[in-house]
Image (cartoon, rainbow, N blue to C red):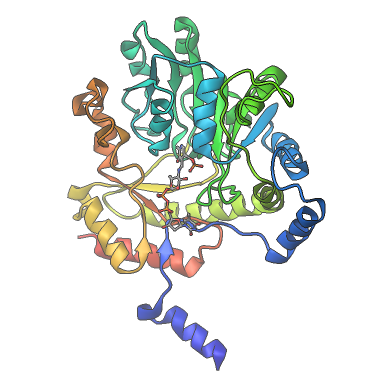
Length: 385
Ligand code: T4K
């Protein structure tokens, strides 16, 4: 009887559970309890405890990076990365990202200078960077949007020519490889987000990837108020530490991550196959030199060919309980704190403005059921005119 009720709830349209753009992957609760018992035993809750140290080691080895410093979230990792490299003045960045990318500059009193994106992978267009460099420019802050690698070689060449630092916002790029190695090895520093909505999550969390022991020390001190030893403060640091609970959760997540990534790939393949048959729907390419993590599934709606606008589709899906998201609309450059900047003008960011008005990210997460994927596809197909 109970099972019948559950099934009717699932298959009767009016009682369907909403489907969100993502849902966090959770390990078995029973297994998390074992970690919690250890925390209860040793009473170390935070401040570089044993799980924190273990997660740093395991993640460095899993990701294939030399040094990693864990953070309370990705935004604090970004803010601290800019501090660690003493970045000042102006920083060249992309308007096509989550707002935290630019906020991290604002919190460091740095002026963001927006440069347009390239239409293939929606990342900062290296061909447009040099025109935006001024004597005040000290760094470039690109984003590997949706986990697609930026044009890293070209960006490196420009940075070296002009003596600029490169910090990658790699919040979407957990587990992404480029030409056989981790994308996180590019740039002076890369930052990750382990937010609940990310491929690998520690509820809230983040990290900085760096390439020397000295830099790791510097970052570790900055995230712990600037302490160097018990009684010495060398610089005004912040509190951005990851707790033992988050670290324990991360250790457990790491055991399941390969399976989670595989499931994402399968979902992306179904979407790719079925949606490519629909006129007016474009699917974002995946860089052939990269191993993607399928963290998002963005599609572009061509109103004239599809017959409906992106926003009409977004609303239609929502009415049917499917909560897709328009990442990244509006562009950061169009938000109030930044829209007065001269680099925010629409004619400076033509491609980004066009794409932000067409994009919609479809639900993708390991526990998304095949029936539901096909239902989403059918709704998109039927809505076309
Ligand atoms: N750089 C980039 C490029 C980023 O994308 C981000 C974060 C950052 C930096 C900063 O990293 P963090 O400081 O966040 O670590 C979400 C996330 O909050 C944000 O982490 C993420 N990017 C951004 C792209 O997306 P919202 O406002 O869209 O999240 P929200 O709460 O609407 O969640 C989306 C859907 O996920 C919900 O409709 C339901 C589902 N959900 C969400 C949460 C939080 C769950 O099922 N369970 C949950 O616990 O920003």
